[in-house]
Image 1 (cartoon, rainbow, N blue to C red):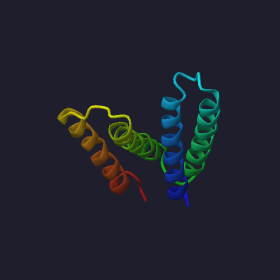
Image 2 (cartoon, helix red, strand yellow):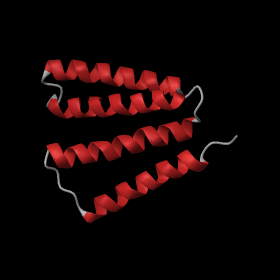
Image 3 (cartoon, rainbow, N blue to C red):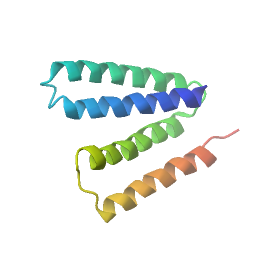
Image 4 (cartoon, rainbow, N blue to C red):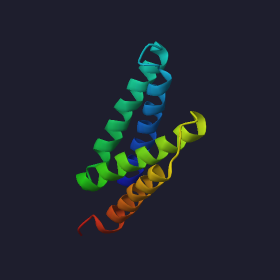
Length: 107
């Protein structure tokens, strides 16, 4: 169940970040309000995930996967540039998240 909570935390963090972009510096109030709600839900789900997942592992996966997904959305929907350097470093984030998932927890 903790991994489901972590996945939901990532989903709501990504939604919150996309809404932050759409709120145009918090000037679009409806987007800003929904953004805050998404972040509250995200942090709540993260806190539930931390009951069973080590904090370093959970936070690395939460933030790392959030970065990867946000960059992907940025390129696709906001037409942001994608350089080879960006791809390499995002790949390193993915490798780190996978490594933490496979080897990060002690049993």
